[in-house]
Image (cartoon, rainbow, N blue to C red):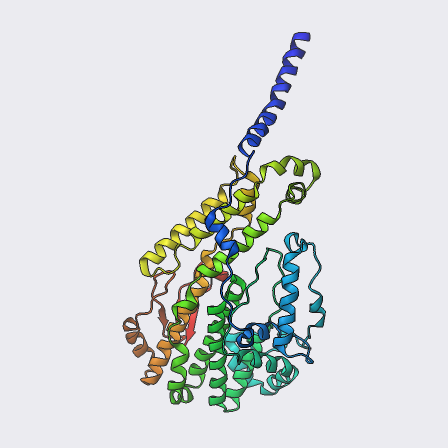
Length: 454
């Protein structure tokens, strides 16, 4: 009996010793943090040249929802200065701080999204044409917002102002989130009232603004908002040419400049992706109170204390930087080389996400995997915009040539040279619905097609 108890005791000790030994091995692998990668240090310290504040529409754009008694640019500058102060505080690192005090001054338009005829851009012109009085009532309610937005878009240049101390918890500007729908309603109402030149002139200014916004974006949010807005603008042009072909044909020379290929300096993603890396790396580096940070990560004091030595801030930031640098590999490539690089990047992302445990810096590795979405989807959003604009430009070419028959459009399609940058596929013409489409794609929201109606 005693012998059996001794054997059982030794077995229990061995079982208990295994995790202890394993933990000691982990400690030995994580005794010392890595030095910061010199290239990451350069990225963190970077301070790109800024355009003069007086010429920069960024401040007025973030001030559109500011109070009426201050110009949008003045209020936007105040908001930005308060955000800079918050970026330097500890609350901007761990997210525990309150909202910016200035945000209590924001105006709120007495309007719901469902009140706007152009909440769905694809039916905008049709809805406004059927109910112009409702559109006028909505635009009257938001007259101040529209006026302030027009002021912002009239600035000669646009650059997202540089924030030297950003973190994952940094406050983002309160952009006019209904602007796309309101601007579309204004365009559609002008068309419905027969003011075609006025409508196109205003839409042209809007599109120029969002191209400047894409070019001047420093962060991913700013860039994607500009892409989404420009897609909405392009869809309005598609609707306009489909619903008012005669008027559009007469104004083809006015429409054509709105559909030229986007300049390369607006379609590159490396700047905004590396800004994301810079922000995430800074957040990792600033979480240097290991007891506090590991406790937040693991949920209680005991596990936090045990996990603390297994989290190396420098190694975490370096790994994040190297991951992002690989993600930018497709940027600037074209054709098959671009699509091959995208595929490799997607596979690399999946591999990184699935590799959940490593001996070196295991907590940091888990944090990086959690923070890493599949950024190839952002290349797809940009490429959808490029493909959409090319299809609508093709629509304009046919309109100029007075080609309207479905069969004639099908015959003209092969010579148009339309290829989706992301997939390498050609669009398909549906004669019955008069729709030119790129096939549904799993990576696109809801597995949707990319359509242009003729």
